[in-house]
Amino acid sequence: MTADTASATFQAVYGGVTIQKILSLSKSRTGTAGAPGADGTDGTDGVNGNKFVPIFKRSATQPTTPTGNLTPSGWSTSIPAVNGQPAWRSDGEISGASTLVGSWTTPVLFEAVAPSPASQTILITAQTQTTAAITISLDNGESRSIDARVRVAGLSSSTTQNVVIQWREVGGTYAQLGSTGTDSGGAGDTIFAIALETLTNSSGIPKAYEVRAVASKTGGTGTIDQPSSYLKA
Image 1 (cartoon, rainbow, N blue to C red):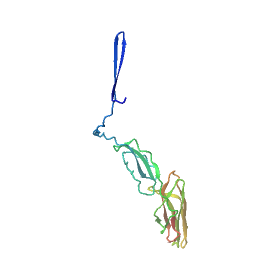
Image 2: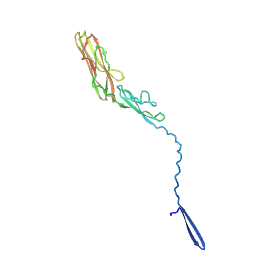
Image 3: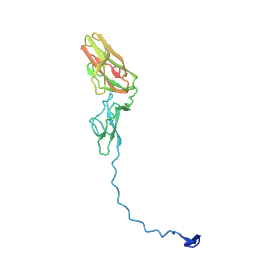
Image 4: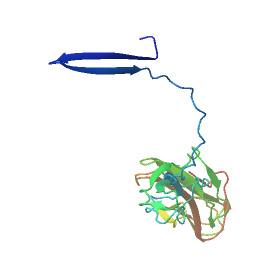
């Protein structure tokens, strides 16, 4: 059909009765597009999403699981400065309203202690002296030999010279490591007290330790021999 409209007439005659049916047809044409409507009103902002936040703490041993919102006491959102102790990490889910969802995770080892030099030495300069500490870092199962020596010459009288090695985890309490090195002599003699011990980390995690030497004597005096008197770790 080429025209926009058309009609068809159908007629039937029966028993002298005439019946007509007219069928009309028309085309539907697309009109010109109207102008766009105005933008609708913006919807309401959605709820802020949750996020996972890590927190950190340095401790010689595994810390207890932290409690409290955001940054629990003793913990930090950044890795604390190196202090000879390993760093531990715990994670928490923080809501858009800045509250903790559930609980902080059990702390896990995040950063082992920094390796210590292969050997460090502090001179012992007096018959009675507590040296400064040497800090050493040991992985689990690692050992380090500790050597403390005091050599005294030209004794004024009968003398007993002692030296012991003390150790502790960083921040802990010192205890004696092994036996006391001791030697005795009379006037004019040279004596040599030696303590040789091994410090082993069997804790299951990397740890930092401090060792020091404690020299003591009974009796007379003498001259400390250098470089034979020292703490080495």
